[in-house]
Image (cartoon, rainbow, N blue to C red):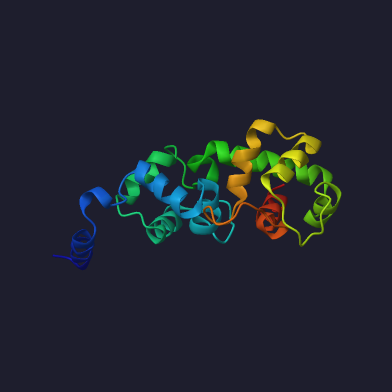
Length: 182
């Protein structure tokens, strides 16, 4: 028996088959429980360096670190179209990726930095927090669709359900990354 097989067998002793995260549905469930949304799972668990894409080896390392125990190739094949060798947030959560991308496109068109947005749109000091109601009002001003605000708010949360507010620095990483991609 190889070391890999021994390790897998030991893991099975601790986790009965029904509790193992070994398929796409369980992987998505794990990510949303642990991070609050697939967008947050991407930002903080799968792509913490903010490159915006992962090759197969990076993806394998990331999903194992998050807690996935199934076939890495099968999981990759579920998300990545044949012939592609990179995965992005868009493959994991098209709806969340679109909401975040559209929101930050609007921001980049109008603001060179987040502090200005915080002062002009939220009417808050850059160190102050905002609630979902503040984001909803700002989105009206910015022309972002109201039906996407809740998805956006959850997607921007750094951790699952720990707080019902956002700070400027919660948006900063995505703001900088999306600015680089323009």
